[in-house]
Length: 113
Length: 149
Image (cartoon, rainbow over all chains, first blue to last red; front, side, top):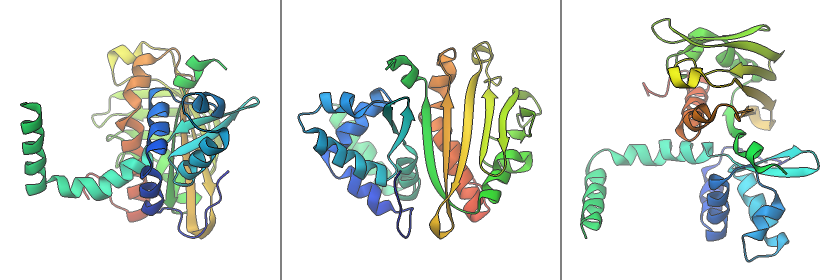
């Protein structure tokens, strides 16, 4: 179980956890199929077991991965709620108005090619 | 490890700055659930989980399997708000409230036994429970529903 010090709800942890391609890959893998063991996750990455554990720990501290015991296995679940909260806090606010128009323009131009 | 059982277990966790009692209240009282749960008025007591839509229609009705205020609530789930999903097998929802330091609680919601309810599983995943939990957090922490914020 993760121990939290001080303020537990910290956007910094989530942004830091997401600022790494391996951790984003781990989240994508869990998104495709949830509830995986360390061994399963490790088999898909060119990385040591210890390396994967380290990344999973950062994700768990950010609340993005939650573990559950199932018999003698520890299963890793994607917890998408912190990303939703960041979306509510940082994205919703900016998607209304001019920045949204530019994003629409970008999408339209890129899709048009 | 049977991989299909994992796919039919969904887990959501959120940290809320409130007492366990306040969070519990927000889960079991219909006048509070109406503010964040798609307008549903939900009653959870030691016997039953009953949910009514904004116009009084029955959205859910099932036994409560564990009732341990303000820590743990387990109830059956049937998606009676949708005719197709209502035909599916019942699944199970577990709410766990764990107090932490600093006035926070960890709220974990597990929706499992979804093997016989693939449409429900797809419907509640993604934005489904996330929307409900972020709404609950906002309501309990600020006293105002997310949609009106």
